[in-house]
Length: 122
Image (cartoon, rainbow, N blue to C red; front, side, top):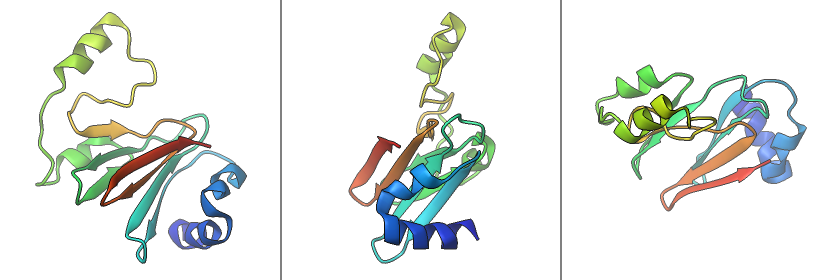
């Protein structure tokens, strides 16, 4: 339901449709014709959204564990993130404790295509 309704709104309103969405959400919108995907999170970051993109396959979930369970995602521990966590410098970091698995930040959208990722705040 969300993907179909959001796709219609995106086609009509462009990426600006997110400014009109109210409430707490984490969403993904796929555009089969353009071969792109849009991931977005609510402004306050109530709903979590994590992703992994290897240039070909975009994987996303509301928790890290399902992503790590995928056979094409490497389970490589992010030692730098652990150092930041212990030192208390994490805040709203995009990085997670697993290399390649990232957090979509609150109030932002990310568009994924074969060329890579584009991110903006809305």
